[in-house]
Image (cartoon, rainbow, N blue to C red; front, side):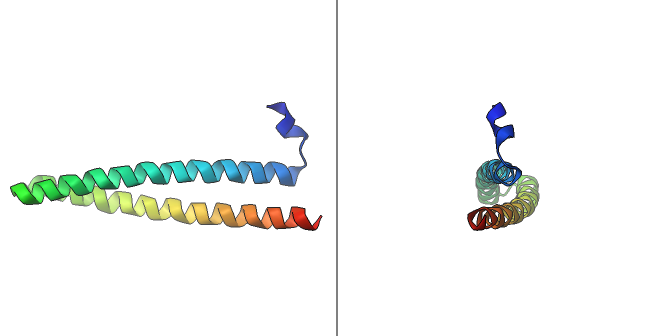
Length: 92
């Protein structure tokens, strides 16, 4: 665990960005699961004519979709930073 601290700072940054990338990817997976559940609820509510549940499911879908878009943007930024650092290391 402490070996991490012995690495040059750019290599530490790459490891950090890799970790953050994995975390954001995992969050995206959970968000997709929630989207699927909300979509199923919405479908069932529409079939049964339950407008209250349909409204709640639609609000969930909208909210979670926004979160997915935010997380995806963060993932793209993290990957860009990681690639930039890796390119710097390759030149050094």
